[in-house]
Amino acid sequence: MDFSGKRIWIVGASSGIGQTLARELSRRGALLVLSARSVEPLETLARELGQGEVVPVDISDPESLDDARAEILASGKLDAMITTAALYDPGHVDQIERDSARKLVEVNLLGTLWFAQAAKGLLREGGQLVLFGSVAGYFGLPKGQLYSASKAAVINLVESLRVEYAPEIDVRLISPGFVNTRLTEKNDFDMPFVMEPDAAARRIADGLAGTAFETHFPRRLTWGLKLLQRLPYRLSLWLTGRM
Image (cartoon, rainbow, N blue to C red; front, side, top):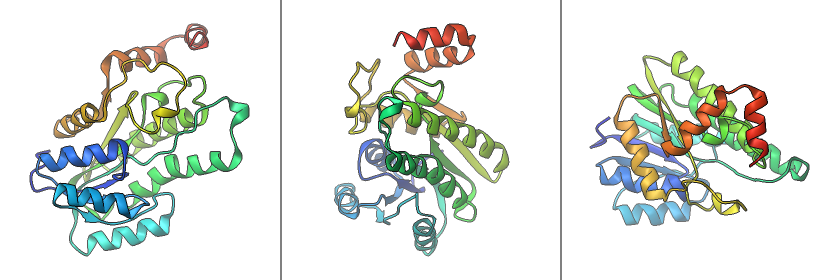
C-alpha cells in the first residue's frame, strides 16, 4: 500500500506501538483516525501531527465500536484499519486474578473479533484489516500464560479471516517481538533483541506496504520461535523449561 492520502484508523494510538505507528504513517502521508479509550492523549497526538480525527473507542465493548464505526462512516470509508490495543499481565498461573484475566481476554481476543466484524462495509474494496498477534502466541512460554494464549487465539483467528474475507478485505497479521513500551516494562527478565518503538513502527509500515500476510520482527527472535513450534514436544518443552 502507498500510504499517501489513504484514510487509516488506528486503535491504540494513545501510547506504545500504536502511537508510534501513527507518527510513522503520518510521515508517509496517511490521513489518520485516532482511537483509544482516553481522549486527551489522542488530541495531543493530533495536534503534534497537525492532522487526525479523534474518535474514542473501547474495542472490548461492541456498542462503543458500533458508535465509532458510525462516526467514521459519516466522513466516508477507510483504506485501512489497525488495532494495536492489548492488555499484558505477566506472572505465574496461580497469581492470575480472575477479573484481570477476564478483561485481558475481552480486550485481546474478543476486542480483535469485534474490530474485525466492524470492517465489513467500513473498508473500501481491497482495504487492509491489520490485526496484532505476538511472537508470544507462537508457543506457550513461562509467565505469559494468558497473554500468550490470547495471542495464539488471535493468530488462529486472523488466519481464518485471511481466507474468509478475501478478496474483499486484505487481512494482515503483525507479530512483534519485544518492543520497549509500558507493557514490556512489566517484565522482570532480560528481553532478547528488544526493539525501540520507532524501529518497530518502520517494520510494520514497510510490511503493510508489501504483500506478505504476516509481518514479524525481529527476525533473530521470530525465526527461532517459529522453529520451536515445529520441534517435538519432548524437545521444545525441555527448551522452554530452561528459560
